[in-house]
Amino acid sequence: MLKYIVIALVGLGIYIGVTYKDQIEDAMNARPMEEAQDLFEDMGDQAAEAKDALDKQLETLQN
Image (cartoon, rainbow, N blue to C red):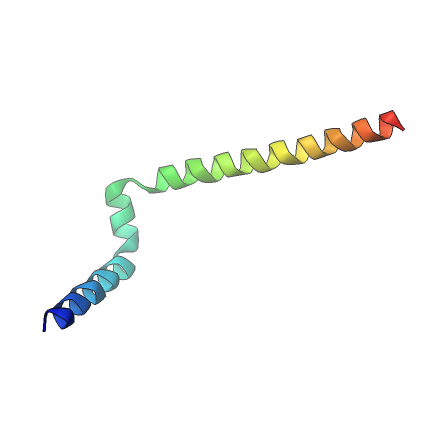
């Protein structure tokens, strides 16, 4: 019986999380953190691309 109660509570938690995801994120102020994380990921990608471009230029200058 306890197993069914646990399954029901987990199901209810998932339902609430999916249904009210936006409101929960707004209340926790999570969106600005996601935007900051995306910005850092983009900066990392740009740095990696710049490094690759510099490596190619160095390789062509050495030849």
